[in-house]
Amino acid sequence: MFEWSETDLMIREAVRGFIDKEIRPNLDALESGEMTPYPIIRRLFAEFAIDTMAADAVSKMLAGQRAREAGASETSSGAIESSGSGGAFEGQDSLMAVVISELAGACMGLVSALGVSIGLGATTIMSRGTLAQKERWLPGIVTMEKVASWAITEPDSGSDAFGGMRTYVRRDGDDYILNGRKTFITNGPHADVMIVYAKLDEGAAAGVDDGAAATAKRDRRVLTFVLDTGMDGLTQSAPFKKMGLHSSPTGELFFDDVRLGRDRLLGETEDHRGGDGRESARSSFTAERTGVAIMALGIIQECHRLCVAYSRERTLWGQEIGRFQLIQLKLARMEVARINVQNMVFQSIERARAGKPLTLAEASAMKLYSSEAATEVAMDAVQLFGGNGYMAEYRVEQLARDAKSLMIYAGSNEIQVTHIAKGLLSR
Picture (cartoon, rainbow, N blue to C red):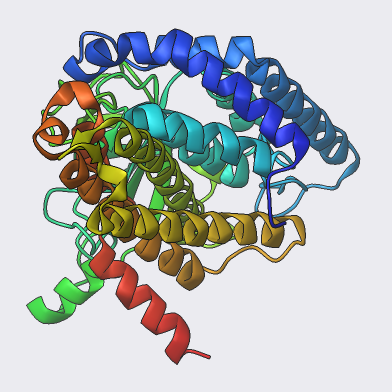
């Protein structure tokens, strides 16, 4: 793949029309928090029949799994994997890349809210859940009837997501009791469904010294649960105030003796064949970091468009500023960044189609480069606009604030370096 297909381009023009009609007039309300992103996302899904397509895909997937389970003997684990784990939008890679990049250029917070709900929430349930769990939660999430969040980050863990995890569950008969706190959770304040990662507390072994006990706590098994809003002991905070991504509600989740039945444990077993919750999260990291590159492409494309137009319109000393070499240098660098990030996105799509998805290290490299490129382009856009660029009405200041989040979002860029190096040194 070296360019968008004719179908992709048709979709792109239609999405741009939707953005002009539904998103741009509401940007101020989205930025202020007066409006949440979810009604607009639902209108997008309805207008492009994305909800119908997703519902149909999930319905067929569930029907296929029911048929397989009806004819299969019981397994010791009780969890049967579905044959298609690519999600409700499997096979629509380029179409979704077009939609996401265009939306990101207009309102990246909206994309973040959508991506976490479906790309992380629904996908985790699809890849790890039992048939009953998929039937229970997937139909509502993939159509955006319900909003999902994906909760792994904690106040004291940061990039040490698993080792520093303090949220825990302990067994209580056939149930589990959940305690702890998650932070920086996209969709957290408004989520109907929450995917929550917690360590299993089996108590300290007798005769174990403090150092060994601390090591044992870091290495405890991580389990993955699905919670619904309104459960006793669950508190969802109000949205945080942030530097950027104002249109993406972010908050905290608090768990105070939340009782969870085994039906809320993904896979309904502590011994999932695909590994514990760590493996579930790592597979999501790869998809999330690839998604960052697609969002970065949207930021770059929008900055590029705005700056080219402004360079033609703005005059100084009797001529268009686009005639000045320093302005031309900024435009040229934006074009190079656009080509590079777009090619990365194209390669990831081709790899997925060929059944050779990116490794975690490759996705980390893609995330590292694209997020830095988008931030640099957006800051150059503010500089190119001069004093106007610092004013909200010219849009580039919002793009700069949103772009910066990509260097922290989905794992800070510093941790991406570690993952890239580990991938290289393990070969």
